[in-house]
Image (cartoon, rainbow, N blue to C red):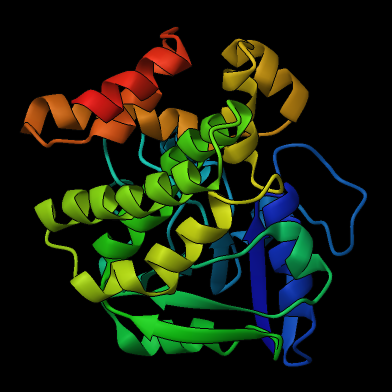
Length: 298
């Protein structure tokens, strides 16, 4: 029996815990900041003693959480969050590697709505790590309805997993403005190009953006109201404030923080990110139709 601890009991953390339990070789525990009445909920202290940890904490909270709560003693960690730290522009691998050796870290990517995982509906995901054996070990934890692949392109997976949330906000705005299917398809495809351009700046591999981590996750997140970030876009198109939108969602939308992070990175490194720049501008109060016009006439 492999003992696995899931840290973070939001929808995604609970969905992962559910998925791991479908594999009879796993013994799964879960914890979070506040006590939950869910199966095998235990204290953080108990979870941190386990060999295998799955981190399902929102990206913007990761750095502070690690500083305040994490103690390393040979755990293997699968990072299940997707995002770039808004305050610093740091990728999650840059944050985690200060607390856990690189060879003990893996990153989960690919198309995966929590609600569908909880229904045991099929999908395919990628375990990304510089250590192939570690990636394969985590891949074995998943149940039969989740097909797993392994990859060494950690940066590509990180870029894809975070950037697609920003494009999903833009896609939600497009639908909210009733601009049509042609516009949505154009936006998503150009979003993939922009995501790839950004990733190449960091040395990501081309194939990552054409696979599950890139195109697969982007097409899912940018085309469904099941996506929190897509719903953020719908709210922005309706003229709602960030505060109103997040209150209605009742959960974190990683694309917001990532849009702010991309704005910092683009300015510092001189990377051309037109769609991400307009999402940031809309979050800061720019009129969505003005952004559309600026994109079309740039």
